[in-house]
Length: 231
Image (cartoon, rainbow, N blue to C red):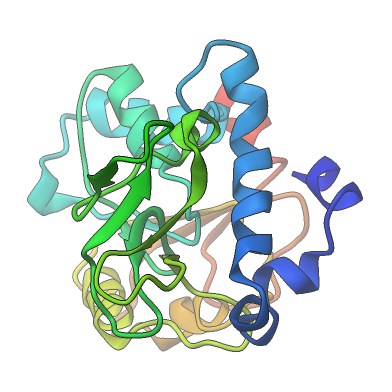
């Protein structure tokens, strides 16, 4: 991902003010993000060993959907892709939304379309595989109703996490019997403070190269999340 920001300005791509001024800039970034997997014949970016490790853990212990919850700040569906590779499915609580869910920032509609090379439009009301952008005449999805450029339903800098996602995440944490925290630097709110707001004592394992800056951690596994899950 760091390579991406050699070609683009991160503030222009992920700041709500800049995206409102030039939404197509964000779509250029997203198209670039999915270009490399397409070159390799892949439909989407590959989940890493941490995503796969979490999926394997859930499958190994045969944890039912009602007894587990994955809370993630990822917006690229990597947890879902990992689950598919391992052979099961689950629906993470995506605090920051998903690149594959689109909406119109002008009228709020989810009746979003894309334009093909023969000038037809295809409805993508439910979800959109962003890796297909390169095959379109107009690679920027737009609103069927008001023709404004659509945006992915993700949290940009300057925006807040939607309250329903936040409440669902808090409820899951408070109902847990064990929490494994992985891949977070505890520097982005509100995710950075969620473990501190748990009402009851619940054992928490943190996988992190650096010692976690909060006192609620019971067990710290020092190391990079990918390396730890790979082992």
